[in-house]
Amino acid sequence: MLSPHLHRLLACPNPRFSCFLRRPLTGYLRALSLRQSPAAVIGLRSFRSSRIDSLIVLAAMDAVVAPVTEAEMERFVLVANEMADAAGEVIRKYFRQSFEILDKDDFSPVTIADRDAEESMVSIIMENFPTHAIFGEENGWRCKEKSADFVWVLDPIDGTKSFITGKPLFGTLIALLHKGKPIVGIIDQPVLKERWIGMNGRKTTLNGQEISTRTCGKLSQAYLYTTSPHLFLGEAEAAFGRVRNKVKVPLYGCDCYAYALLASGFVDLVIESGLK
Image 1 (cartoon, rainbow, N blue to C red):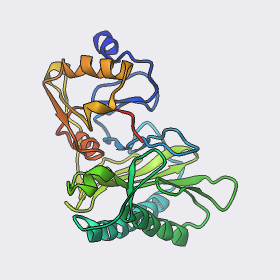
Image 2: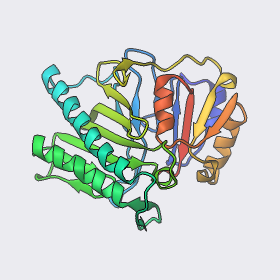
Image 3: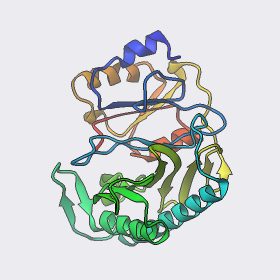
Image 4: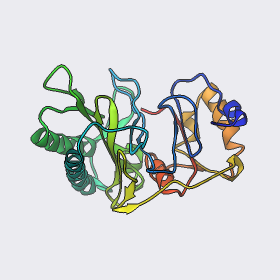
């Protein structure tokens, strides 16, 4: 379990303070352990909609047994790769080009690239799995029925601010849940052409090569990433400060790309707050 010392450092009542560590943590999805074997965890960053306040979608968790066949899993991943390819084509067309930037109700930016990329993925899902539900960052919940066993969760451009400022550290996030349990997850960086894939019961891969988180036995030796220290407010700011002051190197930026670096074993800790 997490050491009492680190528990004290992270003590924070703010429910939107999400912590991702290499070492085991107590709690539920907002405090998730990344275990070495048999698979690293791919994570979709939290985001907020009008109906769902916060969602963290994970894949490749060896503790979760997917009640689907190997053949079904293979098809799900095949289609998910097709979705990432389609979104990537859209995103690369707009990257470092001139386009209109709009503000959502919460004043976060959205572009035509976000919307077109999401629709390209939605069309593939509807063609291949018409009975599946979809929850998209840009257009919310879609489902032909009142409920569905399979739900796709999509964020076409996680890190829109990075995208609009020409920094290729955003990503396309795709996950599939079966009866509420994640079974497939993808982080795709379409400009750098890097793709992390997590499947239930299998090791996480980066462009087809197996990867793993690394061992970090002490917080004082950890490399820490967060998108921005300005996202921490109140108790979350104080909690983050306590951890930041104990790590070896604090680093900033990257959005979802930091989670991919964590899965690859290049960093040891990602802490976020105020995710939308």
